[in-house]
Image 1 (cartoon, rainbow, N blue to C red):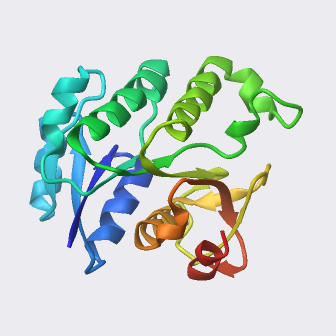
Image 2: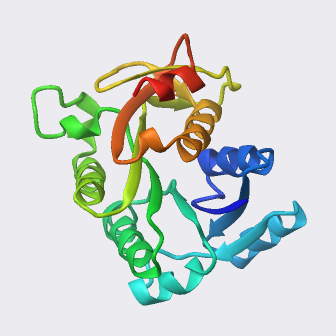
Length: 212
């Protein structure tokens, strides 16, 4: 089984990823969290947990990456997290010899600088810029990345059906479906070095992933 570190495991999407990884025989989830109380919470659930604070140095972050095969990044919290923290995670992964990284980004963020820019990106410009450049840095890295860009997130149940594309504004994606997309991406090498928007739809996730 592959050890998958979920950075941001205590967040709403991160918890979905950990839960679905736990049900998958191919993976062992490791929760990356920011506080000892969160470590204790996951430990009580039978999930290994580690302190991973992306506000620390690259060298300190690297120390938390021992025996990790892939990293899922699902964090947010201002540019120190959304840009600086993510970039340090990429660098730590490279230094630790971890190639596979899956980033949860935001729908249409790749259009931050063009005519398809969405209204919320102007309202939250610094936050949006941080996410845009965090994506860009990963796209330009040597990592085997997949960037998953969900539309407006909801807590609806997993349907297992989605639509994948480059621009899917004003629609919705359940966090449970995002987690399922992440796991399908870990299982399918054709998602390596790919970035895509995703929303709840009508295509089974396994098929949508194959057709990327």
